Image (tube, rainbow, N blue to C red; front, side, top):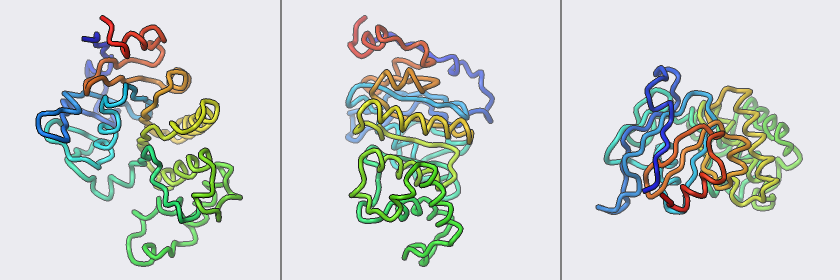
Length: 262
């Protein structure tokens, strides 16, 4: 069994108000008797820039979907921004969580601007926004985000016509449109080459620091983790086997953990 490398955060040294995400003894199975997550514990501090790593099938996406409120779980406790989570979050909490799935979740037939505006739906429920009639202030705000991401000239372009990097930035803008306190991103740069992925992550990292956001990313590339992350969690067969500051994760240790050596 791979050695477990615990986190100093697990010693309970953080005050409750300093914790953005707390996962306690979390278990999950899609089929009875086949556990995807087995007793997962995490404690992510507010303002942290954390990454989750692990081989395919380790449970990374499942954990991310649970934290986003998309999957109910049979055992354990999850707290987001101080609120207990048992299923789909209440609207007031959902507005504070910006979730970017691996396939981005963009509506391909809508424009970049229209996709970004979808991030404001929780603030404007009703038939007008359902039909695409958004307040002028929201349109101006969405355009400001696109401009900040160097996409102002793509505002009226259908998403399916955009490049991979442009679609990533539209997804980021849509998440930011919510005014989130927490961003959860599931391998959202996995389709980009390393330099472009680094460029996108550099932007997210800058915004997170500027706005005091908590960010949790599923990533594969250790180079990106070492460059941007504060802290790394590695899952293997549904269990946390590494939970330490990113500076502690060397290539040698990473290969040892992933290779399952004693």
